[in-house]
Image (cartoon, rainbow, N blue to C red; front, side, top):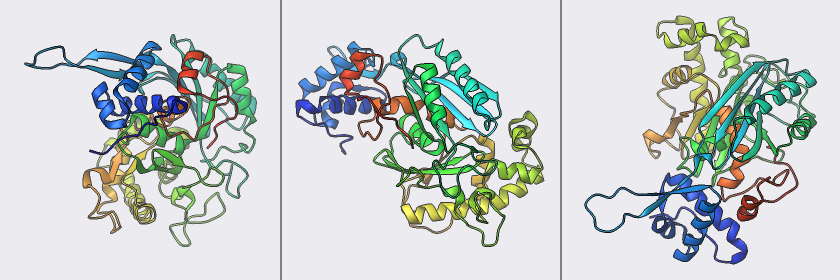
Length: 416
């Protein structure tokens, strides 16, 4: 049996060991002390001390396991305490801001959405702050912070902040500092594809995978490579910007300055263009009904051409990266993604063909439509629930006992 995560034995590694145990409990759903001892290579006494500490501050709860026809007391299993902490996730798209409050096991408890001119700095700040303040009222337990997911790429690149699927004017991210100061909460941010990938890692279909590629299908198209359950970000945080990879020679002009980019064929904006709709109409009940109608020829025609390009993308991803699975998430309606996947069959030959488990080669997010918000909310709690840390906190947690127990650090800011 493969060890899920190996603990360290030195006292200086105690915070890491606690995170290893917490992460193992999260992955398993419920785990006894014997389960933990067997799988994370820590002594029984160390595991007992750690579970006692985690339970004492409310991050885990203990329950007697059901045991049929056996003598003696059944063993105790530990689970994450859903109310052990909350986080607020804010998802930004051109023209729209969505937000939600999420608990420690990934349940979306409350959500809100507003249309706003995202190119107007003060209007956007006011909208985000109003949503955060509204959602924090329901967080009776500790609130870990705010996570913000926004379209990439970030930074001053040749293709940044241009076109209907980009957040124009976002070269300056100081607006997020203003939000942090106004809300008086720790704030983390990332591109939406990385946030969505981390959400799938903690709470989604990739919970048992330490290697996968996440394809974020929303207004635009993004991606993230996850290895050892951490997202690869590249030199400037813009790795796997797959939407702007040219796939059609001499194809449609793209707002990034190239032509034939994948995003011009596989994205919600591409669908809106094909149907003669504005982007804001993509969430209308009328369109959702059309997506459920298998006889809608306009939808079928778009899915056929988009499915061809998706088939190319899947082949490219598999041959370049050899991921254990490709997870498809984002804000696209589930009915649309299912039709796209059907149109992409049969898949092209690749290094994964004949090797990968057919049931796991392509996985559809169970949080389709909510994955951006969930991914954003994951950012403040990812550091706590994952022993493989690349995140650095902007502020120290308000709960000193938890911060000290898990070895949280202060200073800095986590950006994608």
